[in-house]
Image (tube, rainbow, N blue to C red; front, side, top):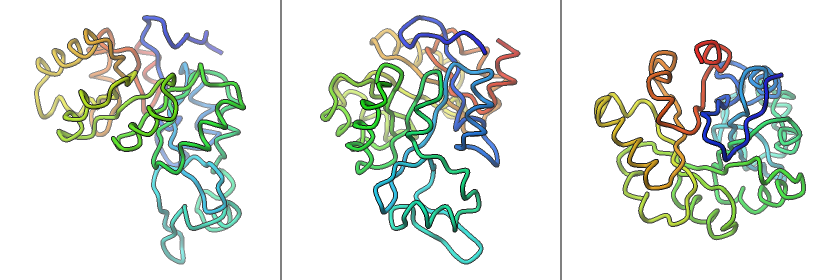
Length: 235
């Protein structure tokens, strides 16, 4: 087990993106494997029809007999219908793992029960709450002004929200922005955000993180890695 990095120090921390991206992403096996190499994990939070907080990226899933909506199903129904079935974890189980957490909040209905759960688990000092939805970020800031709340950048429209969301802790910036603005401007962007007191979390969509992360790691506070086992070897 690696030494756990405190959230507020100046080292670049590594978080496993959905644990490890792949067929088992956002499951306990993926999280536990990631934690062999990473300082923590990033995971997506949604709520079921019977008010259970689960880890799942999309609001729907496709099974052999059709498409289903998470919010309209009980957890037991999801367990029966979903291709990964029993592997889909409740957030309460994830918070029992060691390390640092980045909870990606997918909808406003998640916020109240999630904040309550994190408080009951005494994990508030280990969690950053983030979202690419400015409305979710705004509600998080209102409901928990002392929480670490981040905005995930997913396009040019996200950038306009940065000065309007007072009190955000971090910006979660995709490496893919390099393909739009170039490496030089991307570096300037990261440096500017850091100078403004924001912590920068770097994440990846379609780029080669093993090439780009080592070039950018000194400019960011955290890397949300698709494959922390390979990235750790480079570090």
